[in-house]
Image (cartoon, rainbow, N blue to C red; front, side, top):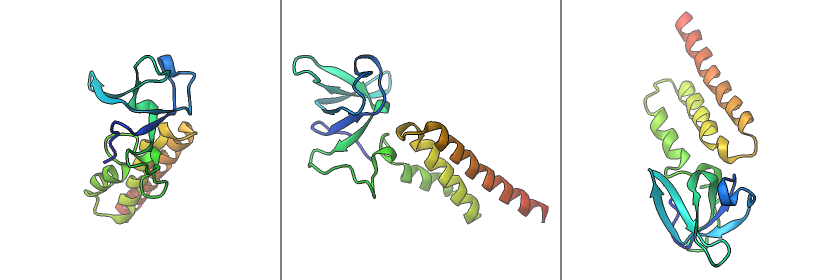
Length: 145
């Protein structure tokens, strides 16, 4: 589970409000809080006023230990939420008896979860749909036999 802590660095991936024109800029987190159930990070972008960034609009780039986001084990587009996508996939596929169907559902889950944090939302949504269709075709084929 990837959690942002005070001192971590985050990068804006999509903009809203004050940071709409600050895409790809990096900020140090001064405080982590919630508003109406949404996680927010407080930063001091200009050195004189505290502002918040919604979690869904950014990714962690460096931890308080100075470790950059791990592009292999914990890539930023899979750790943007409170739960890493690999953990969501493990829970999701646990109920599937057929390994091929489980693989397809897991892959579809991966594409759905990372889509807003990658460069091509529509492409990842289509990839997810393709894997759900692979699972359905496989199950329909088994049902016909």
